[in-house]
Image (tube, rainbow, N blue to C red; front, top):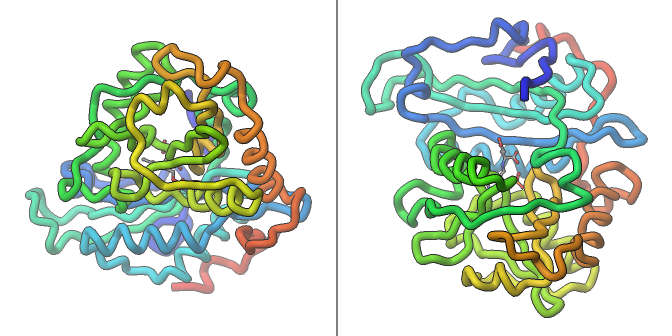
Length: 317
Ligand code: PPE
């Protein structure tokens, strides 16, 4: 699963060659997981590349940094421009954008005070998160044996590097056991989310998803799907989900930037519904992909167009 490189990465205010975007081995982040980040998709629309909900992603990045008391040395507007320029400079039509803020090299020791805050934005092609057929055929998942972090341990609302150690344990277990992904329960045994995606169920015609206090990331795709589902006339409920609802739900799907809207067709080897991708999931997929691909008018203002050319990066300091 080697990644596809692009040419340039925006690092601390300037573009550097992909292979030169490096950090010191004694950077705080490497030892203590002190980073916050975003994952954003840029889609090839008929009108050119367009970034999905850039403003919301950068708002969440700012929240994550604030929670960890990181003073980001660039404004949100500067990082926004960096995202747009990184796509344009690399000539990408559709891609994944990964802004990262981290504590750099000053000293080793847990105390982060005095470590420099560094920022980078990379953009590169990224295909289907859970396999090529996942969007159309759905994926088979298991309930992970690792719980999501407990409240008041690691803040789930912060999209922080350290949170993904828990995600890695879940993912490794799923893959070793032959599943595409794991669903984590929270410390009370209620359904939380996947290792890198939010979860929705369809039960008796209603869409249900766990609320924020079940240790989930406040997903931007989740928020978009909640809105689209309501607009389509579905009843949507954020509620505590007992594990067994996974086994009796009629449909299930993941949402996330990387995973987009991916059907879940089996949980713990039990088929979800009859095991096929269901009609509600398909309706949500149509509404979502219609907008991001530019086939349906962007009535919510969710897309930021990427101009073909950008001002020379030297114009900014
Ligand atoms: N929960 C988790 C734990 C999570 O990591 C993501 C995104 C979501 C929910 C969905 O959030 P949103 O993208 O705002 O709808 N996971 C990102 C990173 C995945 C990775 O493997 O890296 C992503 O989808 O970009």
